[in-house]
Image (cartoon, rainbow, N blue to C red; front, side, top):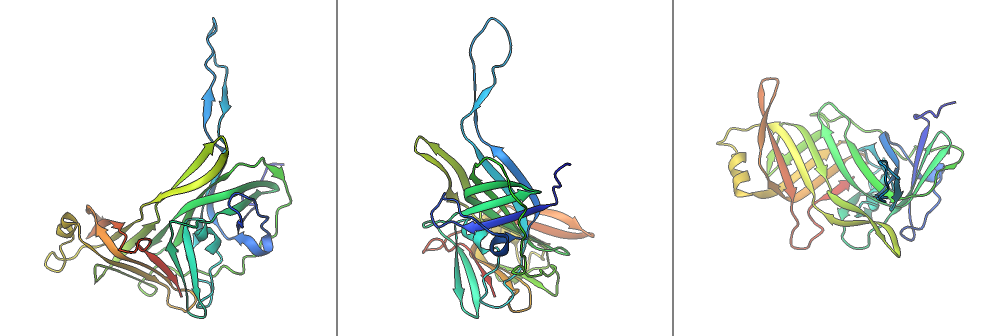
Length: 309
């Protein structure tokens, strides 16, 4: 009988020691995901290139081996102010710190030192894919009339596949999202409230598989965070977005999604730099699409913050 791709459970547990596999459980570590794309074996190959008096290939030798997985998680809070969202372990494995103020908020911010990793279990109908030492990158999409999501991509160490019982996941820690709409969502850029149709944010981590004679690891080696907004263009007398982009203007960016305490997501970037804009049409209305570079301030690791409250 063929494997059923929809019979899948994804588990994630933060590692005490980077690269040393943990054992996540369905009861404590299940992730509620969609749009999963799993590559069980990735890596580089060295071709054998011996010369013989006939044509043909001798094949190749795998010189590195690792696994990759990407998936979405609905953007929602922890259910109560100050409650850490269930997807926080994934954030921590993307070079992000998670700070809690009891009963008030949870704030995630980028870090450069002290990065963490997770062990991922992706069990598809009884075949377990284990990925220790996993680190990754994350972005988000917040489009009108849609459900906002976090989009993760992880690279993990390769472990041979094994038969294992499909775990029983518990998803109660994941809270229901709310749609992107006038009622639920506001967006402002450089002090101006926008009639926006789309917002995206990208932490922009550079994730590499590192292989040396004593090293087999996944590393995050750089970060360049960006965002993008699409909104109804304003009269030039109100705001000259093109001129601002030409000047490289920087200013605050803020998205607030959700209205109920415990399910409010706030993305802030104090120094969002305007980049080259373009135009598009929506129902006969001119829209302007502006890419943004989220620049660091004087302290560093301060180009953005995400507050869950």
